Amino acid sequence: MVMKNYPPQFKADAVALYESRPGATIRQIAADLGVNPETLRNWIRVAGASRPRGHRSQVSAEPATRIEAENAALRQKIRELEEEREILRKAAKYFGRGDALVNRFQFVADHQRRHGVKRLCTLLGISRSSFYYWRSTASGRAARRDADARLAARIRVVHLDSDGTYGVPRITAGLRDEGERVNHKRVARVMRSINLAGVRLRRRHRTTTPDPAAAKAPDLLGRDFTAVEVNTRYVGDITYLPIDGGKFCYLATVIDLASRRLAGWAIADHMRTELVTDAFAAAKRTRGSLTGAIIHTDHGVQYTSRSFAETCRSAGVKQSMGAIGSSADNALAESFNAAFKRETLQGRKTWPTEREARLDAFRWLNRYNTRRRHSRLGQRSPIAYETAAATTSTTLAEAA
Image (cartoon, rainbow, N blue to C red; front, side):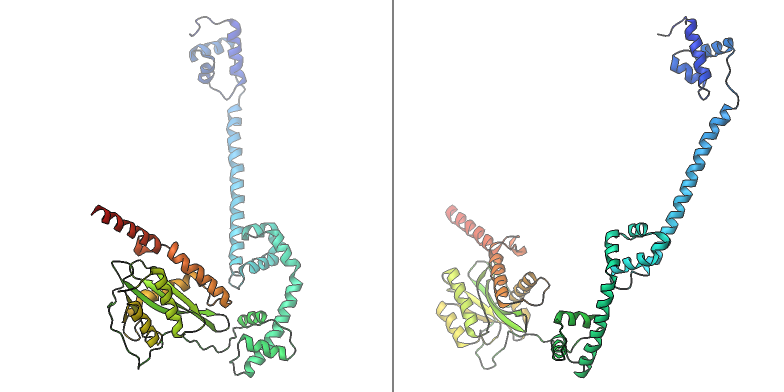
């Protein structure tokens, strides 16, 4: 509740507050004290209180000074940004010269006197310790560059002497015969740096060799690579596993068209008929019996051989073959082989050793059946699909 009568001391203090706060209005002070602005104005008039002149100009001068300081800071920031943009524009010319990190170091070295190492490293996103290490090892790098230049000259001589046909292995051997102690990896690196390469004949390794005189089986699938039930239709094929040094292993497979299960497979360092009969025998062990099933293959000599035909007849299996030279007539097996190589080699061209190739194949082929999800099977593995199908069949039979 607002007081009607104010003590003299209260009035005096209110007037003194007004005098001590030149920047505040009467209305503001009255609101702080809880009195009517006109009442406060009367107290001030009766007391003859006044404020020092010129204060308003002083108060208004303070924001002006602050704004000028802010403007000066902004102008300085703009100058810094323009300078940084100019630095980056110059640095861009260095980035097209090969190794991006080395070029950044070189730019810092060339411009450190003007802009300072710390600022340049921050702008280019590199650490100062890395730059200082790079600078401290400059003499060693220069020595290696000189040594590589001398080696490149000798490589050119050997390469030219071979009519431009020698690659890394033969050039390395030639240099060693001349007394040069050099590693083939270094020769390869230097040859890449001078865009030098030997003649390389690319060849496609064939796994299908048809026998014109062999008996042919009819095409019982007609490119229909599906099956309603497991253990009724299969496809068989051979693919190669490339090993370092131009060597190969060979993988024969037998795949169920209903579940995409790899029912049987075999690996060997040859492509004799035993390779496909071993894969067939593995499929028979998996299923227990293959009686009444169809196995579709290409016209490779292994599949048109008498031995394989007799193996199929004794197991009660009908042979089927597509057209000669048409990969589409055995597309499912071709797709399986492509997936196998893509997921085991993972961008490599070869396996280092036969043992590693066999181990990778062993793991992937078993994982393919037990864990690898297949889009056609509802993202289930072949064995999971077969298990679910068997459960459904049992349930339906019991219900009937």
